[in-house]
Length: 283
Image (cartoon, rainbow, N blue to C red; front, side):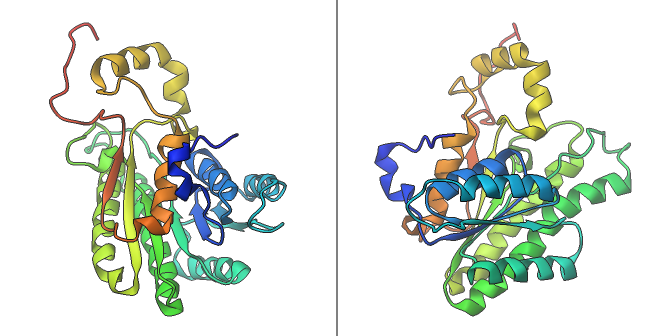
């Protein structure tokens, strides 16, 4: 996979020396983030439940012919972000000790949960979604953020949210997922307020529909319908690719040129959730 970062973003193409922890790294967006950032010279702490996939990812990264970063640029850390704070602290300490610090935390781990109406959703189903998407991100941000503060180096925390968490995009059957992502955006803003004095920036990215493991069924089963809907309702008339649509933004939020950027929710959806787009009767 080659990087698609345009030449005009050359200052973001080299992030050598940055140590980045990515959750949900075994597949989908997290996997692509790790590979792209390794190509930019970052050292990667890949975190997920599926250790076999993490080992494959780290082997791939460590075999890359990249002039910066050294021969061992990636390590795998097995962690279920719903496991609770004691285990999260243990794994975070292991990750921190591997490279001596963590400059960037990307909270990418997430689950969709069942598509179920509010009156039918069980408490257990809701709690599973919220524990993964919100509580796990908070516990990681809390503990990594504390080490960033104590280390005095500053840092960047990037939360992968969703357009489902925005006030302008509500969808039936998504009460658990949408509320967890809305909570993640609120957490982003509050933590940006609280951590700014330690030079720690906190931002969210709210992707629209991108091809990944969680959305593969949509692309496979509804590709023709999806293409028609996108062409007729999305302002840019297309769906972006993770690289460069999301990877370039991730690089920017890691790079020192974003040192004045904190407390934001960056919407990356081709304008698809903008209100007042044209509705065609032929859909």
